Image (cartoon, rainbow, N blue to C red):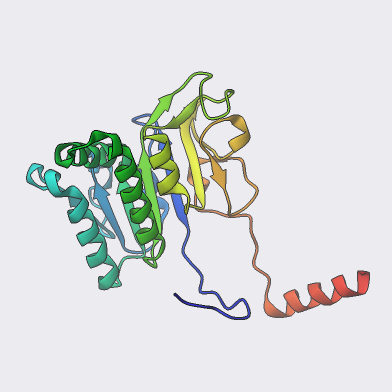
Length: 236
């Protein structure tokens, strides 16, 4: 446990989660992020990154799948200690969930608690990524729930067990659905549409996919912040 006094809290890099249909460009979005990147490719859709010299790719063999949980944690720990990766990406969480669930099912004597174990593992994974010191980008496929979504009025969600999704993405700053309309790739960040979505970084609700890591938040310089505070005191 650590206590940070007087608001002197270290900045934690942002975490982004994007889900959508295949071919909408989820993996390609990684190109927007600056710095050395490490991509975990769980669905082998990394061809769009061929030739990107600032991206290292982890691809697991079939022999790794029965112990995928331990392998993922091992490589993430390794990446954190390397201190060279500014971005860690996980593509695709729908595939990873299926591998993990199969392992839990195979090891369980009582299947009633399997989904609880699944949720706990993904919650711990999210916590580990949050404290990694790197920007995090994760993707998932989508499912169409019609009008039986989260609020009864929405329809699209990440292709993950709902409680597992909530446990994993609770620490993410941005969750959005990517889709193509009129030839343009868009990302919906508006939870009021009924889809899985949120944006804790600014007030944008619908953006072009190329604007994912941009933010409308402008940081004030120390003297500007002081002036703003003094003006507020005068007004009151």
